[in-house]
Length: 398
Image (cartoon, rainbow, N blue to C red; front, side):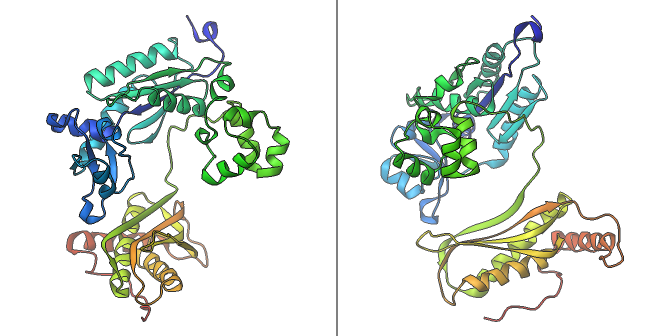
């Protein structure tokens, strides 16, 4: 059966590897299979759960939960240190299998992707079942799929399918929403499952007696736009299961950042500045590696009470110079930090990324010369350390 004979609607598969980090850890250590365990940092170092087994989830453990809290809920929980290199290699193998089916793959993260199979002769459900079985049996990785006519509904379908199979073991779910039944499928679900509905928006909708996606779909586009602005129009369409976004096969980086959570709160301004300078140099290395420059520098700080203010500044010219980024970040730091105030987390990032200019204008810097200088500095820093050489700039005095 050809595509034209079979259907005229899109067919999107959402693939999500079930408890991916844990599945890989079970391959490395089969004795973990079936046990409550979590991949993450140590509780005495303010560790956080990156992933947890389904046996641990049955005890209330969740991703992004402080490890100390997870151990309180599940005293027998085993904490496993992450093996990120192994995870990325396993992910690469999965995505290679997916791309063998079609080139229309939008990888969202190390364990998640959208796949468009609209132009293939075989129907999406058959393709999905075969792909699911192949990944599970040949790569020993449990996985769940959601299938629908667009990305929004496919993702929600997968979430619903996985939630329906809470049994202390990987769900390996496959949920299909037939064309034309998108709004019907979404209607009874909590409005919080809809993209764009965060806690604050959910509170505002609750005041309007809107609790399900169906409730939201019943409100006119005009009333929603009047109440929420542009996001109101988007919510109205999403509530009806409408999503025309294409598969994006290549995703450009929108920002690059480095951050650290200290084992103990830091009060020393000079130590904090040293951290920011090191982070700025690492960010600059990534920019140069990707042949990018950044226009905006961002600073993120978390105080002991977990409040997390951020600040940003726009540079006069885009740069990949670590010292310029460090200088801007430290200036932002001085605006927000009070001498002796404890800091739990600090991070430096950049955004407004672009390719560096290729031509030399009358009033421009010699970017080719700049590139060669930066490459030379980078090689010296890689070989002898970040402090071996740097561009001079005025220090902020404490």
